[in-house]
Length: 304
Ligand code: NCD
Image (cartoon, rainbow, N blue to C red; front, side):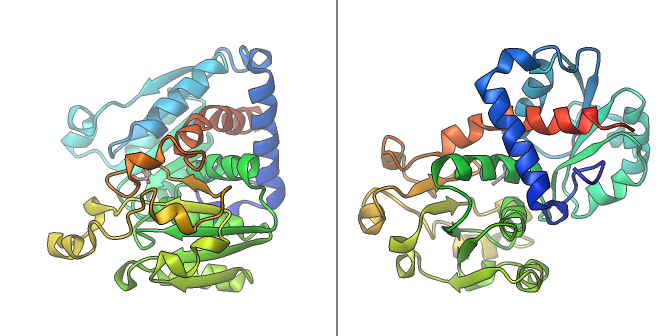
């Protein structure tokens, strides 16, 4: 990887992505070979926002590499409650760890924090900004199930506030992928992401209805409406419950359609899809382990 930190998927080249995905595949094939790889190293977990999958899978990944973790714990019981700045928090935790994972409600927080630390810092979600390690596990899942080139993907739901969408869309510009974005008008991709996609020559189309495009798709990536990011609860209510899929919706889909979701889901994917061959979201979540092991392995092995 060219850079020390992982802040935005837009910084990742195809070579960077393939290096992580290939390492993750090696780990999947022979996890025992990596069991002591980072013995004695410590990963710092700083989560200023709720997390289950991302926090636990980074924790588990580090331990499966032989390392250990230190966790800031809930914001309510940390010094943040006493008014400590983010810059001070990361500068302190840097002294306790060989790499940091940061999740924060403010867009741009990871970029700012990375300027204060010398150890590698992974952005595990900055508000409605980016979530690049999620993207790496998404790409790994797509590569395993549908292939990354000659791919037709639909990305549906909250494209405005969904940071996993922003990262995934930008990373996919490295591949021969045609991207269809399906959302209500009010939750379209933000202008800056649309600009980046356009500037990189990505094949992109926007829709308000899934059925316009469903039969063509190899992958459908469904997302949750990000309730916590709406400035106004009434605005949330206007769009809540739209863009749900169930087994009936899928009658128009290709037999080998892969359905993904970064999770947690609310009501976007009916449980009657879970037992079909389309459902790939739990496998996707499990891929967080080899992919985050691969990412940590690469970041912790770079000569610094
Ligand atoms: C996502 C997130 O935090 O952005 N969750 C995750 O990390 N898998 C998606 C979401 O919260 O909807």
